[in-house]
Image 1 (tube, rainbow, N blue to C red):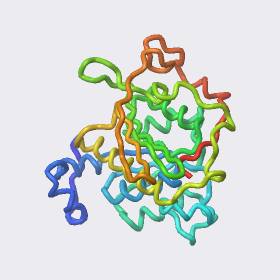
Image 2: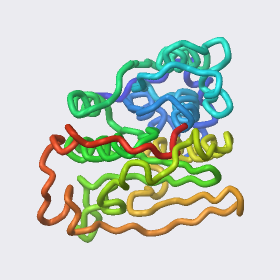
Image 3: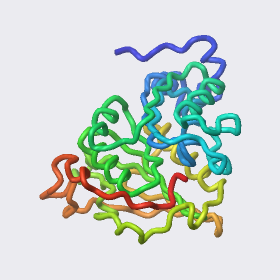
Length: 281
């Protein structure tokens, strides 16, 4: 299928992309053709939605079953005071329409779970996890593996953040698979052992920094620009004003994509308890 042509208005709108040799017209057409699914329209989802829409990603899917509350607004910048009480997916859709009316927004006012994860994910090219609990993270990671979709993942703490890209369905040049979420964290911590955002708080701008990094990785994956974060974990320490990148490797013993996997479908998640974590906010 031929890439969609840019209209004169789009050429004017994206001119700063078009003059980048790493993006150019072909890259912008790839962005226009791309379909990106964002899990969670909260702290991380906010900069993701804003920057992917501004960049001209053609179709953005948003999954969230929550409504906007006043205490969201300290960090969830895709929402505003006028939308308190409104479904987050509807609030995000309204904001995107104001930023870039060329973007198609597909809203899913639901919680992603075993019954809908594969169907939702298979409709899109790339998935972004901005969820706020371990149960959803493992579900989304496993579903992306089975659906063969790259997953751009991020999480935050009160003053730190983490970003990486998972594509364990693909292999490196040496034939070794890329790592999955389960290569780093084989099992979720027991419920109640990790404090949630309401208990420990989060500096609002942290999710802006980390979510914007996440958006950048999505744009790189779509346009084929630069080096992917697959196989590396980018760590942001706000208090120390430091970034560092660490290598992460495929674990041949991991239960999902190892040599002898024990997870062959999503049924393991049917009874998996949620464990709260300070993440998307």
